[in-house]
Length: 146
Image (cartoon, rainbow, N blue to C red; front, side, top):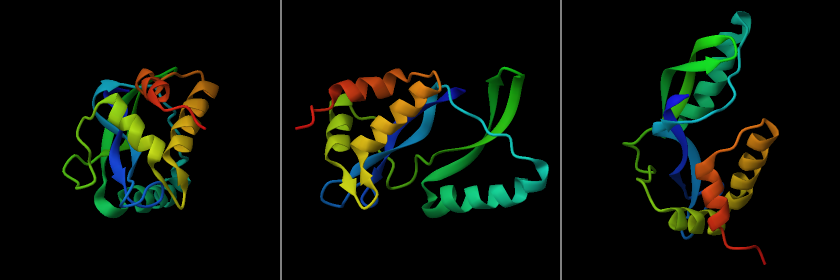
């Protein structure tokens, strides 16, 4: 997908962070490009599935819904995706890899740690034959677990 890239750009003070040690969550942010997975939803289930997605992704205002053009094996497709809302108070402007890694290494909450979230994301992308250089740089910058 051109025009959007994965970035840890939403501050978490619950779930995978706390107010004292906030974590970071991935979102699609402006610029660049990334590879991912697109799901085709059968027309008969589209309204129900979109409602579920809308309630989950649009709650709290951290995301904006966007129609994007994707390159697939079947050619160009139009798809709905959810991108970060840069005007939201949880939006984190560009920070260096070291600071991103520090927040991911320390962020932990009721849903687990940000480190697990990053490592699971990188692993699942690898299983799909994809590599995200930005995420890999963060993994390399993480302090080694004790």
